[in-house]
Length: 271
Image 1 (cartoon, rainbow, N blue to C red):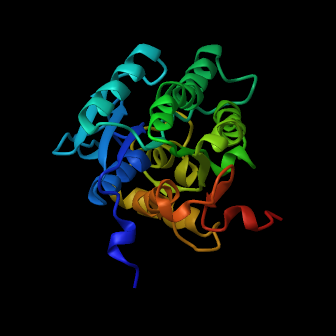
Image 2 (tube, helix red, strand yellow; image 1 turned 60 degrees about the horizontal axis):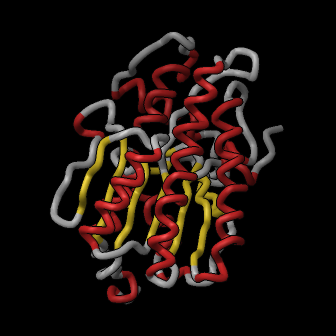
């Protein structure tokens, strides 16, 4: 049995970019459950049930993670409320589909702005606060598509591959000052993003299909699960557990690494 005190983050403060939905939301909720004060930044979800709400010890800021002034202000308010900052998590993402030819310039720019620039801005405005506390920890959510990818994901794969390199640079640059930085690379996780993909592409659906009911979603997930050694789709809370471990003192010697949580997808040969 794990020592409950060892898992406590009481007295620590975190900022979660992209924390209103999906993996970011699950991470913010787990950080708060472990005792941390948490600032959450995000654009909001596609439906009310997908969204996180402000509560004691958890502040929610709405905005655009690619706008420097908005990120800076949200981090400043998090620091003001908590008295400092110890942990940064960046999970903001959009997932456009297309090749280098079919992806529009606007779609490319938006993917890099949300998926990568928000990561840079979180570190740019957040790391100085970590340094004031004598160090801290960063986890950036990448993807297994940053290492290997499906067809038609040029912008998304590029942004996630860049996230791996950017996070290594954080580990190297700020490690001597006590800051650890790692990435988590999930595979398929039941989030609004994956549900949208299921509605668009699942079970032979065309690119222009929209929406999917619960029965259809279960069928698509069952089909996709057969491609993973674990034979199932992950839930967001499983990935959150890994992220929270990596920002906790329990992972005190982990930095500059990518932690893959993809149900074994990258471990197997496709043919």
